[in-house]
Amino acid sequence: MIEKFIHSYVSKLTKEDIIRFASDNQITLSSQEVDIIYREIKENWQSFLYNPEVAFARVKTEVSPSTYEHIIYFYRLYSTKLSPFVNFH
Image (tube, rainbow, N blue to C red):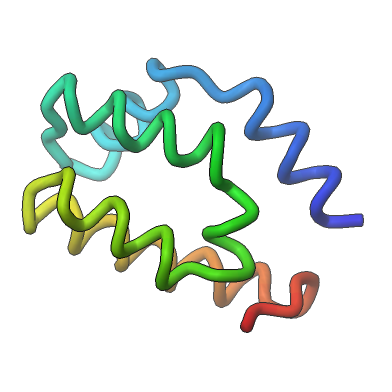
């Protein structure tokens, strides 16, 4: 059930949403990083849910170390909140 909600959210996600989220959290992203994060979320959101190591390895080489650390931080924050609903591996 939660996958349907996540899929619905991801399908409506825009690059502007990513920029706004970053700005709201005092994170500066390059336009290339916005593109990378957007692509990864849109194309590989299930990988972040069920096989995050693969997704992180792919992203780590494409974004700055600071951006990568922010991605890890927010993944941990939100995966904790979703863990009662999603069986993370």
